[in-house]
Image (cartoon, rainbow, N blue to C red; front, side, top):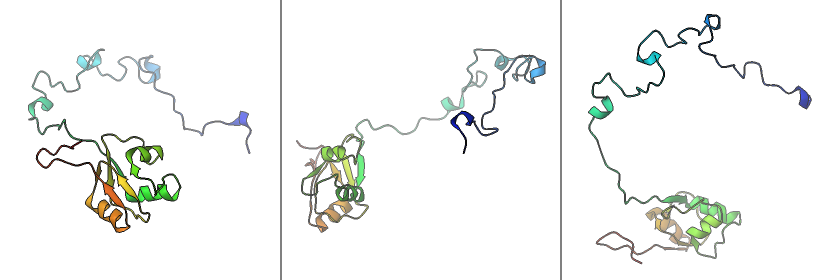
Length: 163
């Protein structure tokens, strides 16, 4: 067993960096690995997508798709994860399981735009779910053990949630 004052890194675990442009004896002197003359041998050059004045490839290709600014970012949680929290005593099966209780129990870090419950995993406890979204398999699994699922009412015409 070694003492604290004898601890050192393994051999070869730390390699000294190459000091560029420090004379011909260093192995990277004179031009410093940049070759001779030209734009890239000089400092202050940023030519990532530059093609000598030709229209760059990333500007020649067509734009595609779009970003849906109304898309919701659900925080997903499985029934198996909820059951694990109940077994560990972090969640009370007799109380309604909401987004706030899931965050408080440490099952989720934050609710984001809402919580979506997925049907994967085994659920044995009879629970009352009150979340923003649940898959059909999750709803059937909860109702199979005698629980209930409460989802916000959604308008048929616009698809928006009704308060």
